[in-house]
Image 1 (spheres, rainbow, N blue to C red):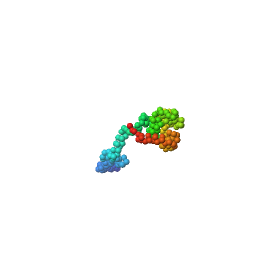
Image 2 (cartoon, rainbow, N blue to C red):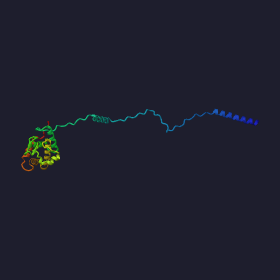
Image 3 (tube, rainbow, N blue to C red):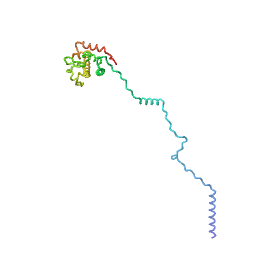
Image 4 (cartoon, rainbow, N blue to C red):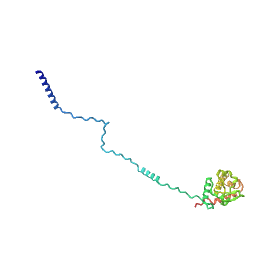
Length: 213
């Protein structure tokens, strides 16, 4: 019994000693867990603003001019008045004659001179016992294939007459030259009396340039 009391006393003293030691030692403060850069970003010290791109002044001016040009209402191109001549033919018929002559590579004044010599500008003129018709006195019996090709059925129509006449002139002048072609147009041959060609060319020479109005 006396030995048991000694053990109890020794245990009590050891417990008191541990309590005293715990009271003396400082209690460590909790440490902050380290934060890796993968989960942490530094707060910006200055506000982030988008940097404006500097555009050259010349570029801005060019863009402005292009925009103004694109929005402008396009104007109709100026059209020069067609060349017309002081002759007794309506202006619309003259315009057709001039355009047709140019399309065949002919001088309009030369075509007009042929009309003057053949019919004196009379669209209803009929000659050679009814065989030659219209402004350019075309004989249909010699030009049936030509008329079919051109889609012409009535040589009394002034425009149709001019079309066929220009087609004939362009062909014979291309083969025989101006003088020979005019002679062929009148006589059906390129050689012989050149009086007809001389008259036509002389008259055409007085009309060179036309008269705009």
